[in-house]
Image 1 (tube, helix red, strand yellow):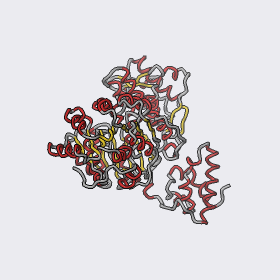
Image 2 (tube, rainbow, N blue to C red; image 1 turned 30 degrees about the vertical axis):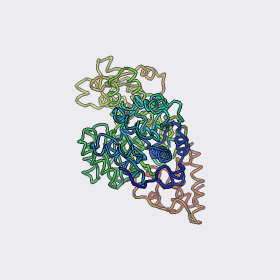
Image 3 (cartoon, rainbow, N blue to C red; image 1 turned 90 degrees about the vertical axis):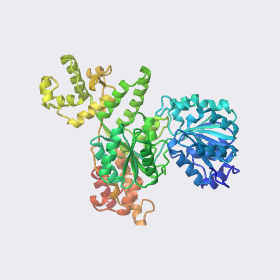
Image 4 (cartoon, one colour; image 1 turned 60 degrees about the horizontal axis):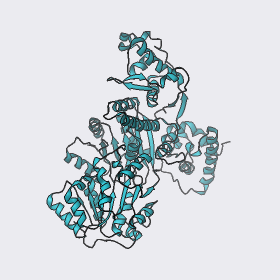
Length: 612
């Protein structure tokens, strides 16, 4: 179990960091946390995925005398974690249900003999009296509680076994504890501190921002085909994770991608354990594998080169969404978080909440989680700003999300909202009927389907009054009314119903501003020019300055930040290439079809020195 001659208890944290892990300096608040725990203090640490949480307990475990005991729910990954540490010369082991008695005895013997620097335990092991007795007989350097959000009952990944971890302090009062998580709102953070008896611990909250991740939410339209286009045009040959709500959808998506030549594998709790283990192993060890999974997959996955995380169904909470998208780009290189979102998602999630077990308070809490997620989807502002604000962090517009790169428009949808609500009201009060979104839209656009005619809905006063919008646009209106609580889903057939807030809209007392879904454009990122973006040739420098001046004037005219028009990197690439045609300009990274149409002539004029 041990590695002879392994570097134990080096003199200082920096010495350990350099000698064992090969880094010259700590990042962000790592040093503050490490020094505090090394000195025997307790800590509650919130850092984004890829922010270096593990070093916050691994380094102190090597500095302090004894063995660092890490409590982790990730049984399936413990072997990989231990193997990675051993590869660094760290003496690491684990105790969990996957071991046979001989393996367990070897690990216990190494722990008691002082031959382990780190010992990983599943939380349920602490229910076993023999495990507690074992820990009593050894020397413990610290307790690290990984994935600490699992203790929060209102969190997105609650694990009952975590509730007993408050006993650690009572049984071993002199052993420092460090709890770590990648996501937690202030409410969840407070719950973690209370349940783990860490209210007096040092609380360290790093920035939640992952600037290398580009957040994008697309209107759902044949999502598997949209996903395929994303992979082929932007991430060919890249590793990625695709999250689906149901096991069936996971398997169908993996089969679809595989049939298109994409190496895709399924992962969900209903698969045989051996199949799950093999698929997970292939994803971690092979290049370019796409894992299609339910949210049962991903926590603790330490694969640094996941280039995209895609959601084909709406996540239930912003915390879950952030945790899942954070599995992309752990190496800090550009990565994509892409979500396909549509009307059916809202209907499905609302229905699941209504049918969920638990009392009214529980359902309200679920609804609050969903409302925050819907607000993120429907915003016309910077998505990153809204995402970080959810975690209590203020920021400026990022310039690297879809709403910054292609600003979404808002429009006064009060009259269309009234037409939808009036149709729902008339069906209920004039016909004692209720229908789903499809029938409402057919009535509004005046579509004489057999269902409309058989029901006599072509005689409603609202029949055909919505021809100013197309069917897709009307579904967008219904989706946003549902998202804002101005419509509700009811009954076994997911029909639309009025809410207490609907009447103010119908009476004209409340304006309804809606988000205009951007038109879908093909992305051509993979064929972009690799023109230099840093050092410019002397002849390109004045071109770059002219482009900056043009960008500044354009941004001022549109009332947007300059980077919303184009990033500096794009302008540098344009200056270096000096294009003379729209086709040439279209090959530059950062120039999409929409921006080519919108700004192309102005850019070419600035390059030529003709911009006035």
